[in-house]
Length: 141
Image (cartoon, rainbow, N blue to C red; front, side, top):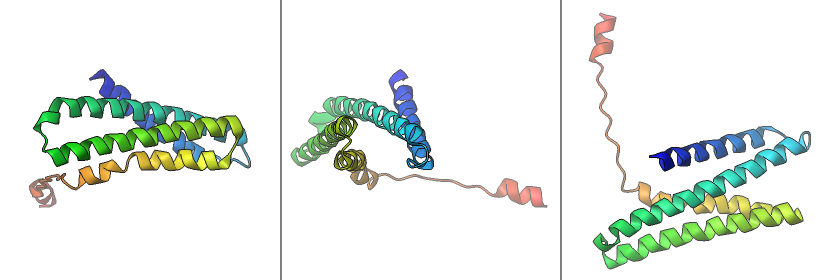
């Protein structure tokens, strides 16, 4: 339970840092912009690490229930996420140490690419919503 709350807090905090970074122009306020960027990357990297560990732990618990093709797909998704998490870390470190804009772009792209496996997981998801308008109709009468 605690890890879930920490995980959620890290995700929301990194999103807040990203939003603040986007609203602070680097040309006018370079120090706050870069600080928000640094905190964004640090928080998102910790978020990705916790996410990957929890996904792998959950996968290991149910791995024997998968068909051979499902096992390969599940392992490929986790490998993809770990690869892009590592690319994000390397890009971030290179950007901070060399100031390379290419490294900065790699780090940003890696954050987005890390989450691509979720797209395939959403296709099997459904949400049932039941709406009752009886209370609204009664209030209007």
